[in-house]
Image 1 (cartoon, rainbow over the protein chains, first blue to last red):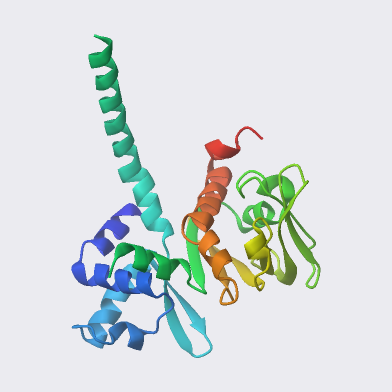
Image 2 (image 1 turned 90 degrees about the vertical axis):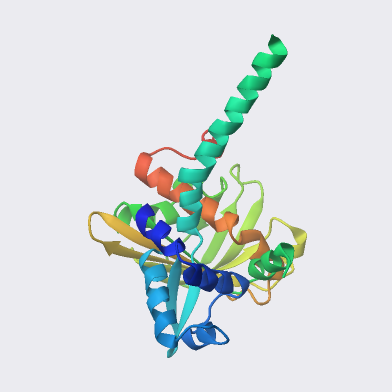
Length: 104
Length: 162
């Protein structure tokens, strides 16, 4: 699950919409994913494949149906690597500034 | 829809799927999930004790073994690829009253010395409080801890004291 694939997968509004739908209710079939969306079945399939390749969506076969599940782990890893780190440095800078100003 | 409503719906999903790539061998991952001395290093400190025989007990104890946190039954063993066991959370009285759910561990070897580990926690329909407790950060913390221990030999900060 490399970062590039996850960022690319997230860099599209249709794919983010599909993720949000799975967030609301996980374990959907392709038909359920396509319902009341302004996208063709082929379009949804194509976008789902990008999400699967990035590891953020996992498919499981249950009997004869293929269900789609949200896998939150790669997004958490992106968060840990690219968001938490910078946020904490930012927070430290502010904390240092506060210490310096108050100490002066 | 309000954010809180959306979050609540997700937390009660009766099937949860988590997948993570780990740079390790199937045998090492298998040991990490079945050896109690190993599980204490990433599983919220828990000693997971089980016999690798279908029908035997699955027990997750507190680090000093004084409390039973999780119990269940081993359902399927195919070392080092697949382990299925039932799961009943004992760490909260509310959850101990709920129906047992099921956890499936699958290890697939991939190219480049990597393995794909999949954890499916399902049959949670009769255990909504448990579903909420293990969802999202619950399993993610366990899996990222497992990955870190196997790849670096270091436990996540919370467990380094033990």
